[in-house]
Length: 115
Image (cartoon, rainbow, N blue to C red; front, side, top):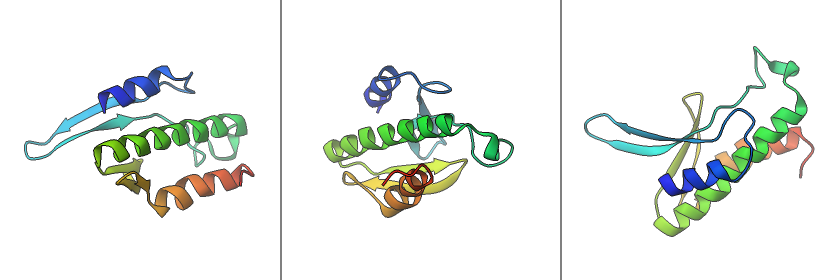
């Protein structure tokens, strides 16, 4: 995961900043993943969030999903996604579920007129 996050961080110029490694341990379970800061299209920004910034965020998240899909294929690890602490889907055995493909990315693409 560290290698994936490092490669992603170096792959482009990110709107706010590159993804960062998250390594959490609550004593029983250790979770390793990444975080990415995004501007939100809901208040306080809402309609004031420039479309090009939202589109760049879509591209960033798509790149992350693609990289983690390959990582999951190679490692057979399950990867969960949250947005503001709300579960938005997972990649299991190298396959993003419908919550990611249709709900998260699909609806976001639809908002930008991308098929």
